[in-house]
Amino acid sequence: MRFKFLATCIIWIAMSYGSICLADVGNETDNGTYIDVPQDFVMCTGWHALCTDSNDCKMHGDKADCDCMRVNETHFVLTNEIQDTEVRNLTQAKCTNEHPCDVDQAPVCSAIKTGQYEVNGTKFDWVSTYSYRGWCNLLKRNFIACDQNITGYSGDKYWAICDCAPCTENQNASNTDSP
Image 1: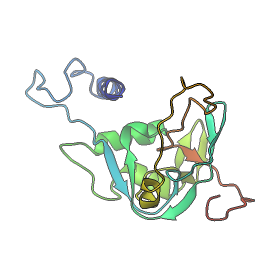
Image 2: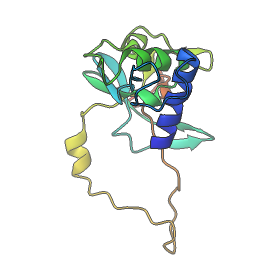
Image 3: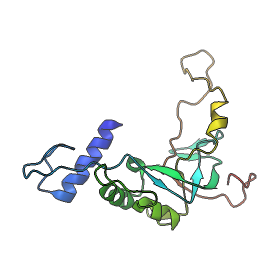
């Protein structure tokens, strides 16, 4: 994960700044300037999909079908997980450790709020992000770690990481709180 993040940063910097593309992240360049590292996460407010408490996900190829809540509250976005390439680049360029973005200042916040979050040519009204709703209940569940090597194991070996995943709303959801 750290390598992927570092590699993404270096590639983005190389493409954006050309002359400093050989510098290491956080190190001084030949001209005495420093490369600024993108923030790990930014905070936004407003409506978003919350899939953290969804325990009914079903995989369909590389997609997950989950009953996620739609909530209107403060939420976090991991900048290296933003799937809208343009929005990720804008967010990582603007929101850095040296010049951090405050709540709702990141371009990704605006993209989520206005339905401009685009993945593979499709704009999405809902994006799964992270917030604390439901964490007290999650902690009470006493989860048991899966061991695929145990005789009789019937669980799946995959799990979905839904942060920054675009979502579509099921207009005919049986649970209107989690469409």
